Length: 171
Image (cartoon, rainbow, N blue to C red; front, side):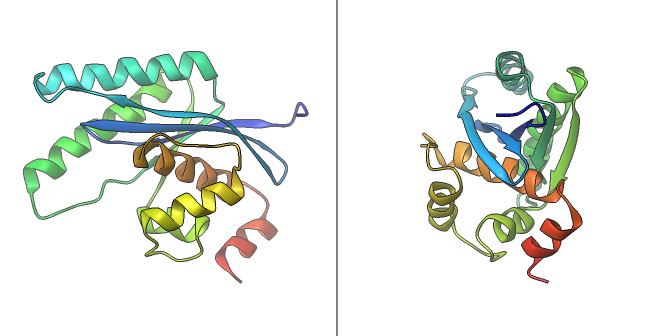
């Protein structure tokens, strides 16, 4: 790895489980660093669950020292209360890197799928298959960790040169 490598943290926010994935980007090369999830127990109050997410992400940030972070946009569903709680978890997921002085990019779920798989409506299995191709050393323990790696990959692709952006978009 050369000195121009950039470390990126991808975060898939969730109240029950927040996935995280760390990659290094060296030119066009993607290098797997680590992944996992931060969990909060259903029996805790909302504030305690948000604190657990923050503390877990702060540990990841301290251990891996990423230069940049990316978070998936909230999926809005029919249950307003669930969407609001997910939004609060997402707020914590954006705050944690910001407290470390790290910029946070945001990506829509369909953009993540299109970047990693080539189709905006790909399923979780297709994402896992492409992760195996793009990051062969990665073996995410959960769908949340896999999604977080996909978010990090999306950020890696969209922060690169104009030529790579056009290639990812299929133009």
